[in-house]
Every structure is written in structure tokens, then in C-alpha cells.
Image (cartoon, rainbow, N blue to C red):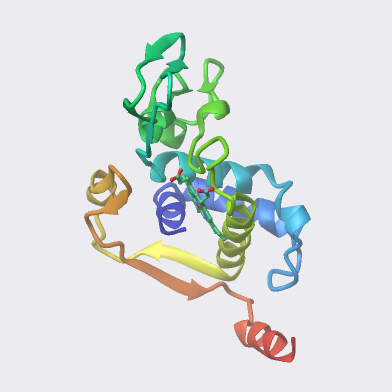
Length: 198
Ligand code: HEM
């Protein structure tokens, strides 16, 4: 969520585009955000895919079982520790090219979504994936519909980006300083009053 807000504010034309998509889908910015509708919004879902691609690395070890394993045609002896470097395949130019931000998608764009591995694959992949996606869609939409976000004056956008370290997990070397204000015309007290009656 934090990284998604960072990328949107760092590339404000995407922020404007996301808000326009959400405004069109939800004319009442504080109304109910139906999960089924959120799931159909291409830019919202694209933004979440992109931030998961850039900010959810892992290197989960597995051990080749009895008799070894065959991976991509190659024999791996029993007991060998193997792991998928999710971040490497998610950022390899073989799979994604050019970088969608800031260049945008062009005619020779590669987007190999099959390699997006944030939730892992197979029998031990994340059982919370659907819930996580719903939470991400809901929380991001709520924030974008109800608030204006901008970096605090003096915040160094590039320095923060250089400090995003995708190793075993995503580490943020630099603090993010965001100024968040209510969007003009959005009465948050109304939301809290509604929540209290539910
Ligand atoms: C963006 C959010 C999330 C990401 C990126 C994520 C990612 C992952 C990954 C990569 C694994 C595989 C771990 C492994 O193989 O050792 C995993 C497993 C798991 N996740 Fe998530 N997860 C997220 C949210 C959630 C949520 C919200 C829940 C529960 C409500 C959840 C529950 C689990 C459980 C129980 C497993 C273990 C599954 C097993 O070993 O059979 N996750 N998750």
C-alpha cells in the first residue's frame, strides 16, 4: 500500500488516471465500494499488479525430494536446495519491457504476467491471495477517492526510489513523507457517522 501510494504520487498522471477511473465507477466517493466492481477496473488492478511486481520479492527455499527433481529439463539431485528469485523474474527485461513507469506501454511492450509470483505458486502458495487482493483494491480505492496525497516539500523522490531494496523482503531505506488532506467536497465525518451505525 505504501509503495503504491509512493508510485502514484511520484507519477501523478497515473494518480489522476486512477482517480478518474474510480470516480466514474463510484460517483459517490464515500459510498459502498462493491468488491465485484473493484475487480473489474483495469487501471486499479494494473496499478496493484505493478506494485506487487516491483515490491514483493521473496526467495523461498525448497528441497528436492527423494529421487531428485527435473526443473526446466535439468536434473536436480535429491536434497538440493532450490529457490525461485521472484524479484529477478518479475523485473527481467525478458518478461517486462520497457519499465511501465515512467515510459508507459508501447507497441513492443512485453508483459509476461505468468511470471508474477508475489503469492508464490503450487500447493503452498498463499491461501490469503483473494483476500489480500480485495483488501488492496478496497483500501487503495478508499484512500484515492477520499484524500489528496502529495509529498512533503523537500522529499527526494529519486533518493527514496533508490532506497527500495528488494532482497528477501522489501526494505525501505528512506522514510516516506507524505502530506494527506481530505479531498475537496468529501465529508469524512459522514463516513464515520455511517460506520458507527453499521
Ligand atoms: C499482499 C499480501 C500477501 C502476499 C504478497 C503474500 C505472499 C505469500 C507467499 C509468497 C506465500 C508462500 C510462502 C511459502 O511458500 O513459504 C504465502 C503463504 C501464505 N499466506 Fe500469504 N501473502 C499475502 C497476504 C496474505 C493474507 C492476507 C493471508 C491470510 C489472511 C495470507 C495467508 C497465507 C498463508 C496461511 C500461507 C501459507 C500457505 C501454506 O503454506 O500452505 N497471506 N503468502
